[in-house]
Image (cartoon, rainbow, N blue to C red; front, side, top):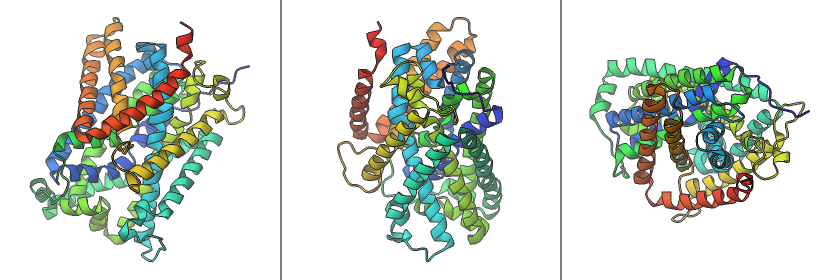
Length: 463
């Protein structure tokens, strides 16, 4: 008898999957980036977060209605196959398996390791580091690289050996990570209003050497990383109980929680430090200023947990990518990658592939984005550009949904997908303007990897 993935996740876990994957490192990692790109212009930064959130919501709502109609193995692959066709579904699956999921996961393991070391060096100033923390040891030192590999291996093991435990980890870390965000949003707003710091930040900019020529577009592009990840929840739609009902609920509820949390947190942080301090030292300084060195550093530990929860969610989706292709009889060796372990109920071969590809992208991220081992051609931001690509791949899906779904209401058939289409086009445009020639070098890598995938596209041979 064929072994299939069991339905083991309920609505709460699915909501935690959406919120937990999206809310993580991005709100800490990219908030500083947004401020930098806008030159400390707080209102412009809030507008960027609002635009990014609105685009996410309309895309998310459109996919929630697709989720009510289509369900097979892996949400976004199912939707691509149903709206555009089997070949496009396969290409979407190949892209998520080789670029999108592993690329994002590789960045997140580094972010988790970085904040772990920042917590340790703050709590223990004499903590031994090959490169002192003040000189960037928490960013490029051998300790952060070794810890990144450890986190990658450990989280992979949890997902591959015990998917139920991975689900519990996702739910628990989601609850934990909301603590510092809510505290900062509420207390930061109150303290900032009382001290006048919040009002000052809204009218004062900062000294930044590399303010973007198009600050709003560059900032929206940066928020794409912070908002991305919700689509990963659709990768477990075949494992969610009553998924046609619960997955759309999870996407909708989770999306609203995410946007509200991000904007309120961003405002709260502005109440705890000057724009210049936030740009130079990151959000950590706001926690320390408001809650004191001890409690502020304890809250940094919550940030580490938040990042690890996001990484776990990404790896959860990453491990299932090759399986989603193999379950359709597609890709390289579908019999091997389509196997599901009888004991763990996990596609272990698919998981091993995910670990290897994630490791490869981690090496690229370190070499090109952190260590500066090369520049110019093929040196691009692997934390943002793959995300923009998926918005490009959404466009044919939205068009086909509007063309085919004649039994849907005007709102569901035209209004939401049209807004999602406009938002996706805007994201692509913002990326081109914000990243310039880096987009060209990335597209070469993208096309080469996709060309390899086409070689394994069995749908061409069946026609």
